Image 1 (tube, rainbow over the protein chains, first blue to last red):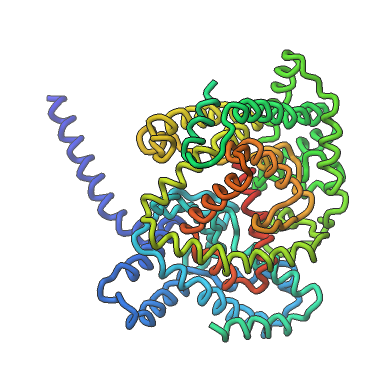
Image 2 (image 1 turned 180 degrees about the vertical axis):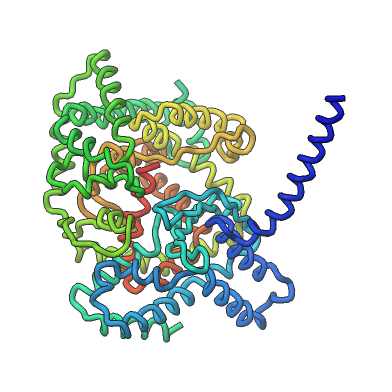
Length: 206
Length: 350
């Protein structure tokens, strides 16, 4: 009967579709989109913060190290540095660039790690991703506190090993943009070496 | 009209103070209305300025540009190079349409645009002295354009810097200890309720901000929120409009409305106690104050006292934010200035 064969065909189609889904799911879970990548990293940070075995003052150093490990995988510090210095980037020699990337990373990590570790019960909502150029995207997220919603956007760039964050925009304030304005002012009457010295002091303090 | 409710709702909260309610309400209403009118007038002038708009519009043909961030300085500034205009607001078509709509509406009501030109011209003058935006930026893509637009003229640097230091001390020596002490005795739900109450009192500001940008739906929602929260929300202590009806506040103010007309910041200004601002946003701030009933409470000491309480209450939710900014910054003054411009730009864009 035609109806029977239709049913059969439907069943086969369905099982084929199911099989295809089973095969596809692990692939997509392997962080292919900007949103999935950001979500994966942010969630692994939240896991560390919520992990009962990592609670307490004694484990603070351990938590910090774990979060630093994630930040290494999450951010593209070279891209971040290049964009922060913008037109001044070419004024730096190769070794100065290397020093700058390392120092800037240290300054950023020590500046924001306390802020990150202060997060506990706030929920993070991953909203959407918007393509900026053919190799950059912006992932919109929001941290929900009991009183307000804080929009945090991650700008990511496609690299050989997946999407990497090169800028974080909190309530409209771009980190790269903010530091660029500061470095720019310093470099107007100081040399790259002077700037590195300032960063070295800042990195050493905390 | 629901405005008299506002005043009567607001005033009984201070039973001991020496209030002049009836006179205050009328004065408040009159000032609010005349203020909205005053600000609406420059709109007409802006709408009658086609050559500049044409420049900006033609450059919009390039849809490739991703930033789409409002460049507040392009609309009536013909000297801006094409590349700068590329970053300008994508909604300019709509804005022009809205402007002409308002113009029509105003003509209908017999309002002329005479005198508005003076207002607009005053707002524009300082831009002549703003920083040149012709830097050769070769690195990066997309975000450098934004950056150039995030610069602000700072001719009053020394005043601003000393005010920055003053505010820094004010925060660490007075505001923060007060907020910490208050936080210790007032549980979070109480502080949120107080915050809601003041947010509700500021409804006229958001209402006017939305109206001046012709965001009529949002303006209507603000009005609805105000009525709902003032009654069902127990004089504004509960935000039932949001929690029960899903109508969230539309955060607009006069400065943002001015920004949406294409008026730039002018110059950066730091005010004692109030913090970072600009020429444009100071004008907006005065407007915001005139729209708030708290301003009309007599005696002035009571009015200021209420504002201080609002500020301390609000600060309890942000202890640590300023500290974090300072800790992260290489130059906190520059960081704060840039942060202010970026944040306001986002607000204007929304």
